[in-house]
Image 1 (cartoon, rainbow, N blue to C red):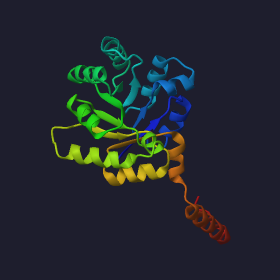
Image 2 (image 1 turned 120 degrees about the horizontal axis):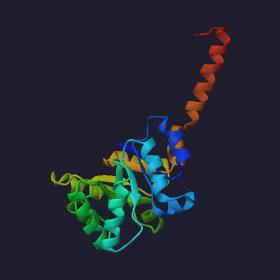
Image 3 (image 1 turned 30 degrees about the horizontal axis):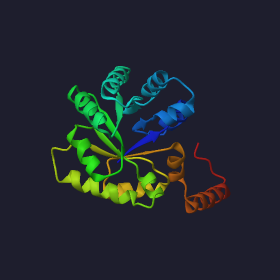
Image 4 (image 1 turned 135 degrees about the vertical axis):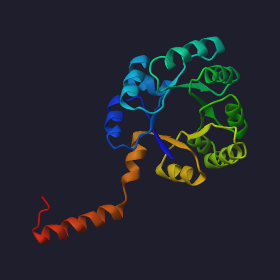
Length: 218
């Protein structure tokens, strides 16, 4: 499973990149707005830090403008993945850009039927939003299970399931159990995955016992 970081904060990405655990980055208009910076500058900086896919989302909703924006974004850096919404025009843009060799992430997926359409349009990634489904009383992980099962029936489908709207480490675990290809998460979720009370307790005991020996490895 690949780990993407869902943020537009360059400093956070730089810090996490040093762990070697980050395979890519996803951004969206809300994250760009939160950063308070120009989208083109942010995407270029992130792409220079992370060699893997960096999703940059179009801002328009009509076909012609989305296509123009997508082409401009993909020309920024070779590892840009153009992100489009799962709408009729978004899928049309996905088809054109995919045929041109551009990686496309189709976002705001909330049903298996939508995921099928994204795969047929040539998307490199489809982003089902599990947390938002959970928020309205639906089972976000059931959607992941359905999409993974469907995609597995068709070898011609090359779209990766990119689990988005991740709210806690258990979402990551469940996505891995179901065979999702990618999880994108806020930096805070990745940091939570390190922690366990027994790890802390065990390390404290080891350190105390080591100190009693009076030894030094160096």
